[in-house]
Length: 222
Image (cartoon, rainbow, N blue to C red; front, side, top):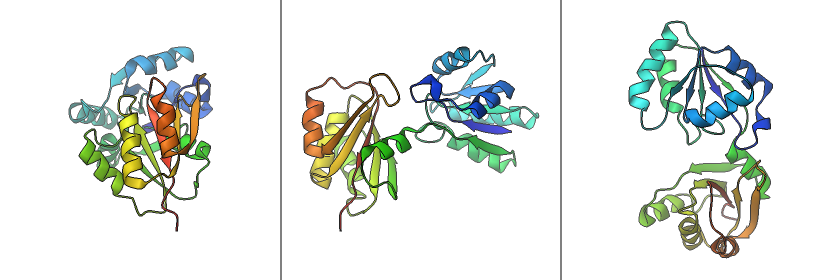
């Protein structure tokens, strides 16, 4: 069995009882970041071997993991935080497992996308998850503009090094829409800023960006 196990995005107390049960029962934990997963496992006194599985070794490690599963073993896939497959490794091994008729299941839990969306104060009944935008300005603006006429709320991830550039481009492409910028969700210094893109840009310009951000932007109003 291949298990996709959602893990805390910050607060270690957000792990589910079922996730702990699965982590204790599997033969191997395939981790995006073995150091971070090690902290989680030690916190809950779980002693399981880990295998590094991330975006840079997927092509090499997925065949090995599939062979391991075909031997009758079980694997828990764990991203550095949140739900595997959502802007984190997961898709490749899921597809490979399905092709080999290996049972796959998911253990639900934390996701920055859903948490930011619900906290944003913006419509959450329909949304488009966009993930990380391209790094270069031109490509990023085209990426943002793909949904310029969509009525759906949009959710993006962005790094601390590009958050200001992203907000500037979003303002330029989408106009001064209502939005929310979230950071350190579930942690001690959880931050949620709500307002128009121009207002959020002004706020972030006065701070020293840190950690990954989740940005929620309202869709086009009819």
